[in-house]
Length: 282
Image (cartoon, rainbow, N blue to C red; front, side, top):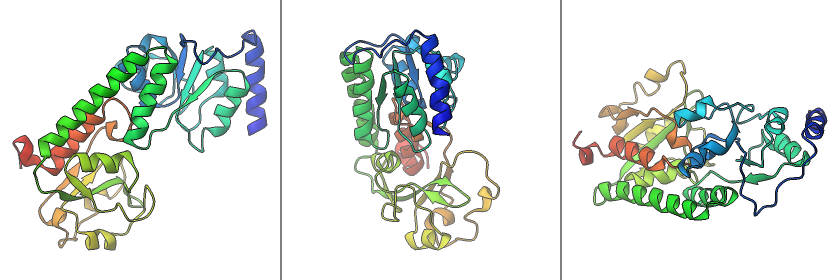
């Protein structure tokens, strides 16, 4: 599939005049974002009007839903990206988009790659996106603001005994957040201890026997989509404190999965699930 994609991209480049990519120091006026987290960062930097294309999963803020689509997050369309005539394409790397992104680069379009696994990645990506837009000061301001709001969440639960937390991201099979993830860091910021931090890998698949052994006090179910059997997944595990005490919390929303400006809101929602007493509940 690699060669046909590249061959399709090259005629589009010719149709656009074969223009070379702008220099790295040139602020981008036409931007394509291939990740929801990046789209949110662009808007937070006050540059949403520069977006001329986004991936199909870009749904926040609401204005992003009205922008032209250039394929999916995992499989972007080389043809649609190049046809948007971007000065820069902003992308988070994944095995699924590697070939398409390479084809876009081969078509002469400047690509800026940012990471999204951890909070450190988030600070770096905000600065990199801001630099590509020619707004480095806005980038520093955004980093400072998001860090300040995240610290406010940490302060809200400071002094409370940490609770053992299992953060579920998939039901069939049972997949949870492991160590080295943004979600693991947000659990810690919210006053929790990730019981699957040493279960192996960043997204370990675990058994119900391990759930029993790790005895989480809170199970946060952030699994996306609707999966059969999710309501009784932990039924009968009465020795697990979270099951015994009715502390299985459904966690809606996608902000927890995006390294973007809304991570403080995700951390706050997690903190309310883990320590409801700090928020006047529980």
